[in-house]
Image 1: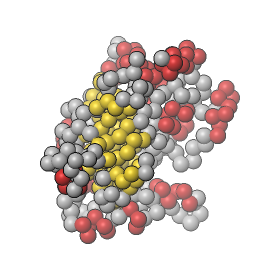
Image 2: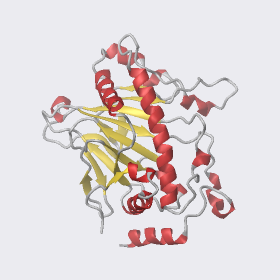
Image 3: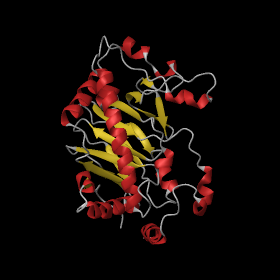
Length: 316
């Protein structure tokens, strides 16, 4: 039977040896059968969360000329501001405005491979307009990076791998990325009477992502194995975690990456805001080694009993 709601897990259980086995059992169920979860008690101070919300919403109130100074097309890193309707998913326009940020790194030197342009520069809004923006988001990215790597170790344990199984894919100064997204409502878009696409149906690419739903709007939906769209409404004190396709591939299909989408807010309800954090992996990671699981490639072979559990889910 396909899932009809998104499970809520308490990360604090994983930090207590007496309750960690219970958490790992819950996580295993999510990984094999849902691919999405709410995570509470993640360890981000409430005052930082509120600052992230305040600074994130305020960014979109900047004059357009200020936002265009840090437009994504101005840098080879694919980081920066994107205008409303600048992106397309599944052959349709995504009605969203956003800024992409990243862990700060040095700009690529001429001797380094071209792909290292992806590390820098991060284009930050002017401190004369938003003096707190960079400090707040730099701290949030750093804290979320540590949380994501800890959570990845729990994923490994939940499916019978060593806790450090994924560590080979992370660098000491690992780059992580983050978006701040504004989804205007259908009235503002001039699209009343239709179902607007905030972002089209897709799966996330790498290991894990962590979504802070800022406003009370519904709109995020997750597709279950029966093809039904399940609402994933905001719940105070939680982040929404999605398992990415990279995680699914590395675990031989055991960890489920789930299709999801965002609908534009209903007319007159105002803009929806969200802050998704995307866990990064090393740009130098080599995935060809997945062909040699028994010889040390990838994260190793997931135990047969866990793979059989996943096969039973798929066969239902």
